[in-house]
Image (tube, rainbow, N blue to C red; front, side, top):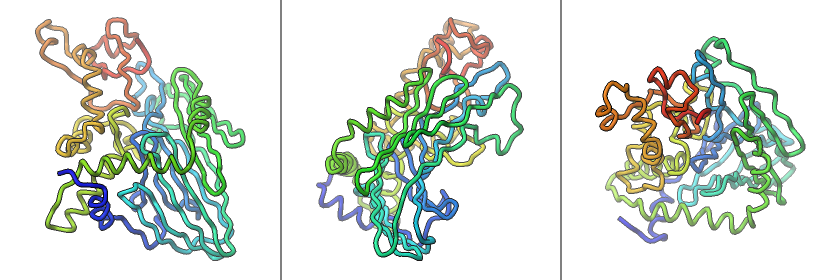
Length: 374
């Protein structure tokens, strides 16, 4: 069903998510995202923090016996923390689904500050406006995470896994180089009371810093950023309308539409186990034995092919998937395809099979999404 914007807004406003206290961890946090850049908002070390991650950021270490979940794990980016004069006391927050924006106020022992934040629908920008009142004052600082696989918190460090260097902080730029090549850069600027933050990951080249600079330089005005962000989301919702007689089910449906559109896009990596919001997990990769299927089931039902990273990825990698099939007969490869249970993000269909330097392909166990050869 297609509805106009006013009808969609009235329906979605009844489904907004509300917090009457400060979220303490990811499982009760508001989340923002565009399928690549993601941010979850909760308290870390007595500060309200935007936990920033990106689904395209992963390690690139390879080795004969180096497990993928360590060598090519997704890696955390860091957190944007709000430093206040007073201690945090409480909060009133609303995640408005229609505009895909988090708004509200946070109370401290010295006053209050308001929040208006979103991850832009199509640009890799986290936009956070902070407005203090009373005796409160706020500052933001970015704290980079360590570039290590989260799985190391559960498993013994495998032999052959190299330690990535520490990030380099220069003013409002963080550069994280990787031992296997590539770089992740995080850069932010302030425009009066508004912070604009962006993340870029490049591999094998180390030009991510240039990408972040370009993103911020071409960001445009704050008003146009907000308008273009809303236009994308309003168009999505107008094409998603389902009317249910049960108010709770109706709210649940719209929340799922918001969640899936925040977590994935056709031109972004297939969703990993925690989407773009990488948290402490022993599964920092994409699982194809059940997780992917459960995550993407609703996309075809709602008609949103612009969110379908799975079909796009399989189509682009079709030749490599056929090469994974044992070469006992040519007929088998013409009619079959295979892939391993787990792959790393981001997905790159770069392997050329016959020229692959990875012995895994020669053993017939290639994942089909090699990020190092070809």
